[in-house]
Image (cartoon, rainbow, N blue to C red):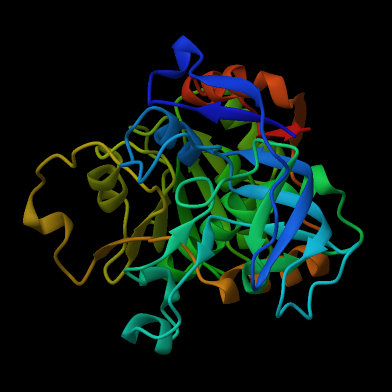
Length: 331
């Protein structure tokens, strides 16, 4: 099979991923082999390739928003069956026995394995996944449309829930990329009014097209107080900006896996029970809930299809914020 392989972290400008021919993977106990139909390009892939996230081993095939057809199953696998189309997200496996796993917080499992980091990912023609960490997909959603739901969508959904935005509230979005363009559709389905703070004019326009009440630069005033906010961007300076617009008792949820340093800010911004929380991965229940909701409300992901060989260029466009919606690789 063909795959885009990383042998050492480097700036994406240097094209660190190389197309190589690898042996077809085989399923072990409890695993399935997938023929990949589509794989979304995520900012976390960028952080992986550039070394912002410690890499457990090399070489590595990135990619964790995978839609594939099951072509083989290993021992002890009853479902999914061969021929089923499924999705694989960032969470590739957990121990299942620690206190976090036993209390419904498997996203915090200290032994968690992540797709495209500990397990070979989806920038390839085939991959192997744990059968208990794949998800059936809505039949009416094409593979390329489903791919961004598996991380960008799920993380956005969890961030909205932690912020308290799955309700008819006023919510601020700081940054408007792949995750936010799904999250705005989810938030609006619950009656929320979305205010988008983003520098790029084309992202502001995209937010308005998807129903944002207001869109402007991060330092601009939306003219109202927000009940809650989600910081989708990796810019730490957006946290005090979000707090300045937040009503007492409101929450700022930070959806990124990495973030630049948060500047100091006066305690009065946090006072009156305002909160700041991170969003660490997501559980399988988060993914199932988001996929059910996607089918119910008809979430539409705005995607641009690219060939597998264009993975380096895709990551560079993500780095430069030159994407409206999401990029998807189609092997």
